[in-house]
Image (tube, rainbow, N blue to C red; front, side):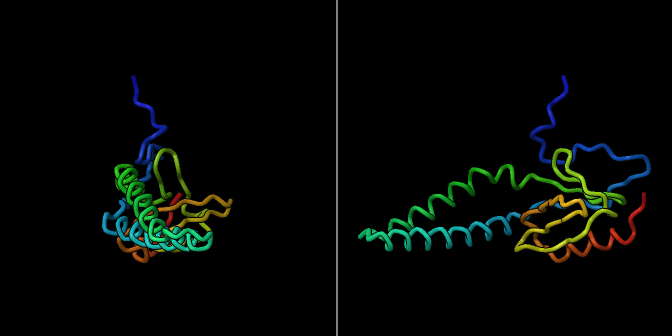
Length: 150
């Protein structure tokens, strides 16, 4: 029996005839950790401000709660987030499961923190998260867009 591709963290879209993978993009553990550090700082501050705003005398518990929530989330989803793979081919950008964007249909490529967002002319959005050098990832995709075949 074939394994379901519904929960695959790598591209499952078959390559077309003449299509080749140029490069693969994987999440960076350091970028993942830094993103969660910043998320924890925001969550801790927000929790403390909310508790202060409602008059709770134990404002410090907002910081503890924010840190615990983000820390638990980071630990829980790390096994999935750090095993995602995106492939850049001579025709498309292929993502987990059947996500795909034809290079000639990409309208914008931009960086958002440690992520690279691809927006197609049809309005589809794809996010390559936790890149070690998002500017370089963006540049490589844009360079391949200029050389796209098919």
